[in-house]
Image 1: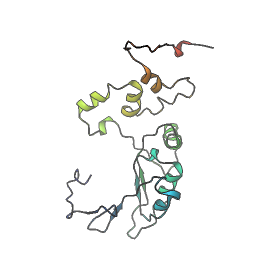
Image 2: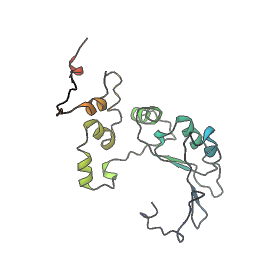
Image 3: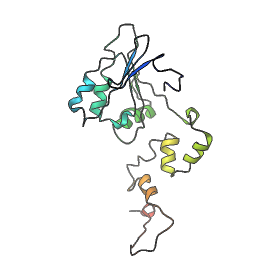
Image 4: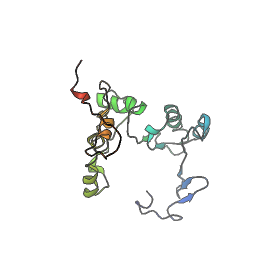
Length: 190
């Protein structure tokens, strides 16, 4: 991001690789902390953060308890009246992030202090050619990752999820001793 913002290291900011910090001339510091429970038992690294705000990238990859710890560490250092804010990015796959944020946002039942800003193709830095190439992926993938339709694969009443079905389709079989059977699960009724 520093490169994209034309910031020059050791002029506009200093990076300390060992401490995993970026420090700016105005004394603002960005501290990078890994939220991996296999490397941070009991969330001790996360619990030690005293920040005015935080950014959690790919929050849906965190265990829910680690996410709660991380978001609770904001607003603890506020010498200059900085806003106490958590900025969270996620792909709300099936799980806690989808249930607590995406589904509630879709239903209009998010708490008043939570805002969703949906990233869509008009926000993308990808070229039109790259976007066109990604649009050739299986429909379930395009629906989820290009069209932000996180309910597309959440087919709780179906026997098979569409992403699993799409992954199993083929138009070519190699001549082997392998026996193959096909079955139209969508065409069956009780």
